[in-house]
Length: 305
Length: 240
Image (cartoon, rainbow over all chains, first blue to last red; front, side, top):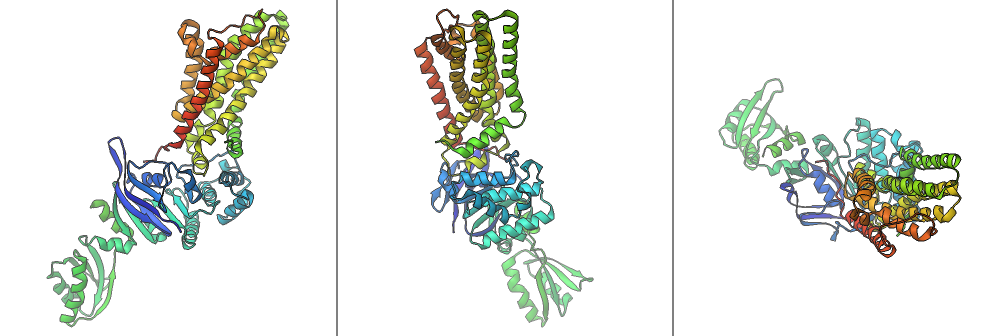
C-alpha cells in the first residue's frame, strides 16, 4: 500500500505556470487525473514519475522524495505516453530487459508472468515495431508491472486504443486497483474516467479544480445548476410551487416523459425544498433522479468556472 | 558500474538500423584505398603517414566517433525510450559509463582495427607506423566517444555539432589556425602516435605528449561526469 503525496507543488516553465500550487494525496485504488489538454496533467505525472523537478513544493511517495531518487522506481511502474520503446526488440526481449534493469532475481519468470497478465504471450516473439497501438500499450503495461510495483502511473493510456483494447486495459487497471495498488491514470476523456476511476482529481489550467468521486465533485459545485427529473402525482402544481422558490431556476413540463425537468441552482436548499413543498401540497413524489450526473456536465462546469 | 542490459540495448541499437552500414562504409573505403595505393605505388612510409594521418585519423575516426557516441544515447532521448532505462533503480552515471564503454568499443572496432589493417597493407608496419596510428585511433576512440556521448545528452543537435567539431574545427581550423590544434582530440592522439612511431617516420603533433595526455583524460572523465549529471536531471520533453 503506497500513497503519493503532492504538497503545495507548483511547476513553471519560464513564464508559463503549468502546475499551480496543487496539494493532493493519491492512495490505493484507481484514481483518474482528469482535465482538458494542456491542463498540466502530464507535468504532474512527470513530477510523480521523477522526470521533472517541482519548482516549488514536494512530491513524495510514502514520505520519500521522488525527484533524483532512483530507488523509488522499485515501487513505481511507469507507462509513458510516448511511443518510443526499442522497436528492434521482440516484446519478450523488451519486457525481459526491463526485468533485468530492475535487478529481479528471476527476470525471465517475471517477464513471462507480466506478459501473461497483459495477455500478450501470443505475440511476444514478434518485434515491437510490428505491434499495433494497443499491443504496444499492453507491452508497455507488462514492462511497468514486471517488478510488481505498488504504484502504477499511466499517462493517457487509452489514447489511440480501439474500444475492445480499451475495455481490456480498463479491466486490468481495475484488477490492479482491487489488489491494493495505487493506480493513477490521466485522461482528457470524461467517459474513460467515469467508467474506471473510483476517485477523481480534476485539473483545470494548472489548478486543482476538484477531488472526490464524481457525484461528490458534482455536489461540490452547489452554485452550478443541477438538473433533476421529477415524477409526481401532480406535476403542474409541484412545478408552480417549486418555481416560487429562488433555489429553482427553471422547470420544463416534459409531456412525452410525463415528468418535470427541474433546474436547481442551490443544491442544498433545493434538496430540502422539494420534499417540503410536496408534503405541504399533498403531492406524492414518484421519481426524483439527477439527470445530468455524467462527468461531461460536471466537467464543462468546471472548465467554465 | 557496468550494466550488461544497458550495454546490450545500446549496441543492438547502434549496430542495427542504417547506422551499421555507415559504420562499415568508411573503414571499407580506407582498406580499399590502402590496397589500391599499395598496388600502384608499392610500400611507402610517406604515403602511409599521409593516408593514415590525413584520412583515417583526421576524418574517419571522428566521424565514427560521432555516429557511435551520439548514437549511443541521442536517439533514445529523442524518441523517449530512455525512460525505460531511467525509471529503474540504477544509478544514472552507471548508465552513462556503460554507454561510454559500448560507444568506445564500437568506435575502436570500426576505426582502430581498420587503421591497423590498412597500416599493414600500406607498408607492413615499417617505422611502427601502423601500430602508432592504431594506438592513436584507440585513444581517440575513448575521447571522441566521451565527448560525443556528452553532446548527445546535452542537445538534440548533437550529430550536427559533433560533425562541425570534427570536420570544421579539427580538420579545417586545425590546419589553418595554429591555436586550434591545441584543442583537438586528433592532435592529442597524434602526440601518442609520434611517441610510438619510429624516428624516421614523419608523424608529428603540435601538442606535447604530457599536455596531450592530461587533456585526453580531462575530456574523457569530464565529459562522462557531465553526461552522468545531465542524465540525473533529464527532463523528458513534455507533450504539453
